[in-house]
Image 1: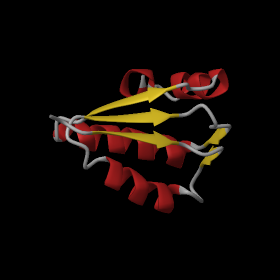
Image 2: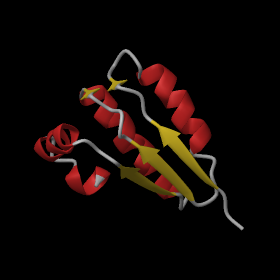
Image 3: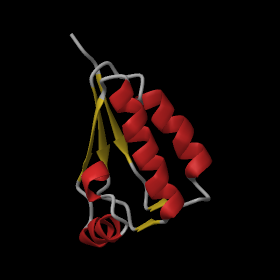
Image 4: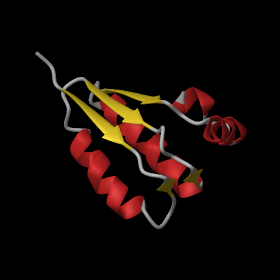
Length: 90
């Protein structure tokens, strides 16, 4: 039986938080088969935050761990789209 992990993002995922979130996501990446990332509280994200999510998802894919980003606010969805990361983070 595989394990899964759920992560609740806070209101900001910017360069100021990347160090902390990098460690939290690394721990979550130890799940056997799935990591769920709840972005419902996310209000602000910058390029460093998007890059962290993209790198985390790519790292998990290499270990056959699925990553799902859900409850993404419309404004953040638009930022992801404009950044050209819809396929990677969708």
